[in-house]
Length: 428
Image (cartoon, rainbow, N blue to C red):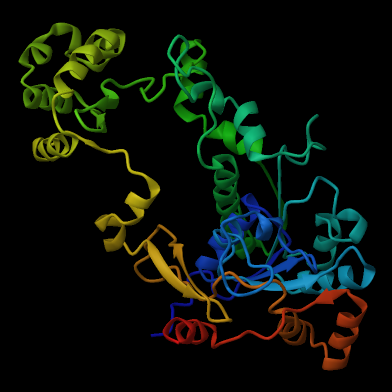
């Protein structure tokens, strides 16, 4: 069966980005059907191609890192040196035919090549030009480079992440994933879709300015509102919740589990399950405000009653009693979970050289126009020749001249029989 074209089919994205925040946005657009042309540096490509190990073993001298593979499916790769005038001219022509351009260079960094928003919008007034930077196009920090770890610290996120003061291991901790990059990519994608609707109504393109710091500050959500409304500065609470009790990890006899009671009724059900009717009847704990005020007393008592249970047995009993909770899975455990299999969250893809890989699926399910998995993350420059011929009408001699001069680069021919070669080696 042919994959669905997706709800964004017919849209063309020119992707000048690298690393994670912006490639994450363009991968989402590609998953939803847009054609994404990724422009990379000849000889090196996206920085993350080398961010390993682990690397995808494909028999090549320079295999791609897993980090690159996580954010670059449904794209075609062109290797163009736009630091040279001839390369910049090629990218300008590609932008003339694009609906969306995405870049994450420092503020003003593309102007010297004629690839800045003002220049390209003059050429193509319908273009949606998305810039993703650490601190945005304006403000006293605009010229600074921004990285996920830096943004997690500056934004206040790390001030509420980690063990509380006075506990072993106290101190700020970053989130175990580059969430500032990922959230910015999500916000950027939403902004692009909003700008598309504006263009549909008015015919106008525009410049979209997304900053990692802005995005992460927006995602302080309840913690920031706690401060704005209550005046106190939120602090680190480990795995505890700043507003809801009981809502944290507890130690069973053999493992840790999570207990996440979001209502008074769920708390009462937990007390009954644990045989602690005394806690359920205690007026201090009748409502969440009281449980929050006296959380230390309550959590000590709950911990004593949970400690003798085996984790799997308690989680099964909680599920039957309607008490929300769950295990703390490792990544290999969740990827092997039957719920993940039922939701088809792992998809097998094959590169043009025959190398296979599993990827994490796009999470939203659209009933009439679902995401699709058409193109595995490309080899560097694998589509240079084809795209320049089809999009810009360049002939073979022109392409060969550009290759000879180093303005562009192209991947060697794919080996379609690589998997068969490996199988033959194993059985020889």
